[in-house]
Length: 96
Image 1 (cartoon, rainbow, N blue to C red):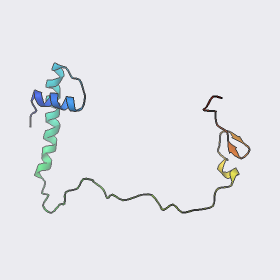
Image 2 (spheres, one colour):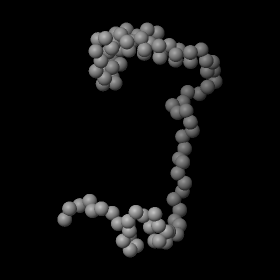
Image 3 (tube, one colour):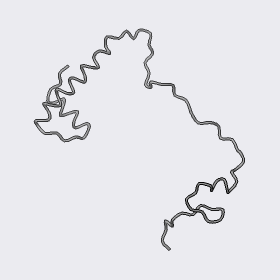
Image 4 (cartoon, rainbow, N blue to C red):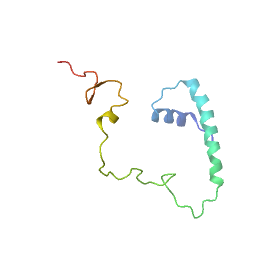
């Protein structure tokens, strides 16, 4: 399915891409080739296949939030680059 110049200009505007006159012809050929590759999908038999908006199952992947014991301060701070007592030491972000 060859695209004409107006269609390429419209696609560029939708993508908010500025293209020159010479690029329009080049992109028309490239985009037409891409569309032709997808035309193969029209040959597939999709009888009985329900339309879907997602390739995979939509479900929550988070576990339930259940209370548990906290880590001891020494374990929590064991990999801290800087610490001060039982606290993380970080650079100040506010000037006083």
